[in-house]
Amino acid sequence: MKHQVPIVLAALSLAACTLDPAYHAPFLPTASQYPSQDAAYQEDAAHQSGAPAAAPAALLGWRAVFTDPRLQALIALALQNNRDLRVAIFNVAASQSSFRAQRAELFPAINADTDATLEGLSTSAAEPELAQSSGSTIPTQAKHSTYREYSAGIGFASYELDMFGRVRSLTRSQYQQYLSEADTRRSVQISVVAEVANDYITLLADQDELKLAQATAQSQARLVGLTQAMFDQGVSSQLNLFEAQTGEDTATASVARYQRQVAQDENALTLVVGTPLPANLPPGADLAAEGIMADLPAGLPSDLLSRRPDVMAAEHTLLAANAQIGAARAAFFPSISLTGNGGLASASLNKLFDSAAQTWTFAPQVTIPIFTWGQNQANLDNATAEKNVDLARYENTIQTAFREVSDGLAARGTYLDQLAAQQADVDAFSGAYQLAELRYRTGADTYESALETQQSLFSAQQTLISLKAEQLQNLVTLYEALGGGWYATTPAPAAIAAAAPVAQPPARQLD
Image (cartoon, rainbow, N blue to C red; front, side, top):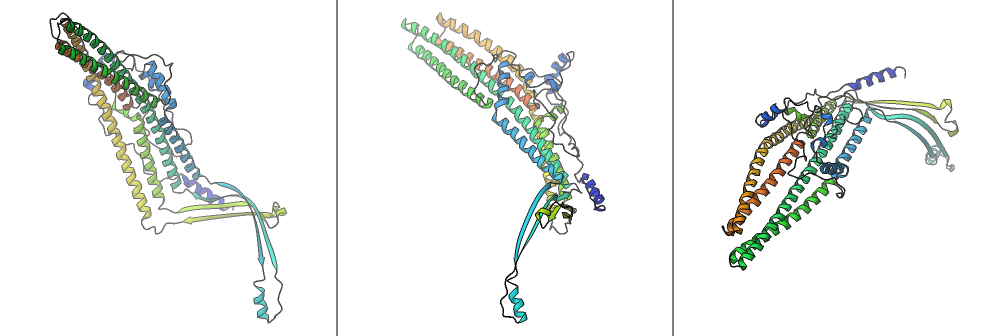
C-alpha cells in the first residue's frame, strides 16, 4: 500500500487535464453602429452632449424605464405571480441540480456497508459416490455444515480517474447549460415585463377609443335631436333624419365594441400578471400624457447586444457544446476505474471488531478502447457538428437582435414626426367639424357635410390614439431588444473556469 499511494496521487493529479478545444468568443457578425442611429439621433446627441453622464447600468432597471406608478405596480405583481416566469425559475433549479449531480462524479462516492452471509452445505449428495467406489452397501448418514461470515467496511466502487478530463468536460458542459437556463430565465423575465407594458398600453389605448366613441355617440345624439326638430319644422328632409340616426347607431356600435375590447384587455393583463388586478392600484397616466415611459438616450453602441440574455444563453450553449467535444475526445484514451474497501471481516459476529479481523481490498481496472467500430469517432464528429450548429445559432441570435434594435431605432424617430403631423390633422378636422356643425345648425350647409366632417375627425382621432400606442410600444420593444434597459456594462462570458463552482451565477438584476 505504501508503494501504491504515490501512484494513486499521481493519477489524481492528472485529473486537471482537459481535451476541450480552445474557446474564443465569436466575432460579432454585425456592424459597429446601428444603421439608422446617425440620422435619427444626431440632433439628440448634440442636445445631450452637455448633459450629465448617464447612470450606470446597476442603477437602471425596469423601474427607471417604466415610470408610470400603476404600470410599475402591475409589473411588480407579474414578477411575483406570472406562471411562465415560475416555470423558468424551476427550470433553473432543475438545471442546477443536474450540474451538481454531474460534478459529484469528480469525486469518489464513499459508502459504508455491512454484510452477513450464512451458507448451508450438505454432503449427502457426494457420499453415495464414495460408497459405490469403496464397494460398501451400508447407507451413510448425511452431514450438514453451516458457514457464517460477517463484514463491515467503508470504501468506494468504480471511481473513474479523470486522467484525460472526460468527467471534467462533462461537468463544464453541464455548468454552462445551467448558466444558459439562468439567462433564459432572465429573458423570460424581460419578456414578462414587456408583455405587461404592452398589454397596459393596449388597455389605455382602447379606453381612450371607448371615450372617443362615447363622445361621438353623444355628439351624434345631439345631431339626431337637432335633425328631428328641423324635420318636424319642415326644414330638413327625412333622408337627413335617417342618416343622422344611422350615424348614431354606428357610434353606439363602436361604444359596445370598445367596451368588449377593454374587458378583453383587462383579461389579458390579468393573465400575464398572474393574479386578479387589485382595486387599490395607484393612479396611472393617460396615454396622451408624458410619464408612462422614459425616453431613449442617444449614442447607443451595438455592443449593447452582449447583455441580452438570449445572446448570453446562446453563448453558454456554445460553451457547453465546446466542452462536449473534450469529453468525446477523451473517449479515445484509456480509462482507469478504482474500487477499494477497508473494514472488518469475521466468521463470528462477536469477533468482528477484533484487531485480527481487519481486511482491505483495492481493485484498479484499466479499459483501453481498441475496436469500437467507429463509435468514438462518430461521437466526436457529432459533438463537433453540434458545436457548429450552436455557433450558427449564436450568430443568428446576434444578427436577429441587431435587426430588432435597428428596426426600433428607425421607427422611433419617424413616430415623433408622424405624431406631430397627425396631431395637426386632428386639430384641423376638429376646427372643420365645429364650423360644419354650426353651418348645419344655421341652415347654411347640408347634413351630409357635417356628417362627413365628423367621420373624418373620428378617424383622425382614432389614428392619433393608435400612433401614440404604437410609439410607446416601440419603446417597450427597444427595452426588450436591448436586454432589459438602455445601458449595459456586463460583457458576454468569454471563458470557462477550470473547476465550475456550485454557487449561483453572477446576479444580473433587472431592478
